[in-house]
Image 1: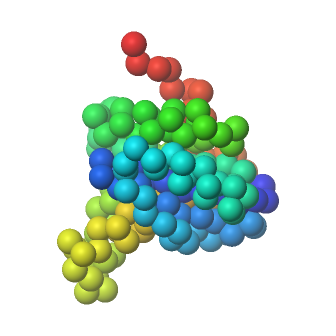
Image 2: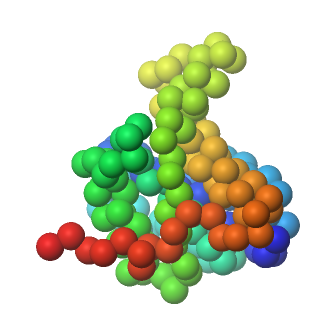
Length: 154
């Protein structure tokens, strides 16, 4: 298992949930929710420096059949925007149903769904990042795919 802090990102149309790992890559924890405004990349760049991130893992929302959707294209667009402001490697990992699981978890602990939306985004980011950490630990392979494996749409 590679050492260093990783950042997990759940891309939404309104907010971006962020999670971080410990330096040993064992545990993902919630970090912050960013409003998806024109300055989110500036704040994200600051976070990357603050916690010395060495890898970024972004959830790739595919349909249940594994096909690309509008949300998939949106996540790829955000991933490319992030990659344009940092040298840190960006990887994408299948995140089917993570937001559904995050909503279920919040409901199970009695949290109001509407008031908990920013927290739900962080929980989804935790699920994405923890999946990547667990996959790398169990297989010895990098989780997901490098951003460079996704050709730009014409």
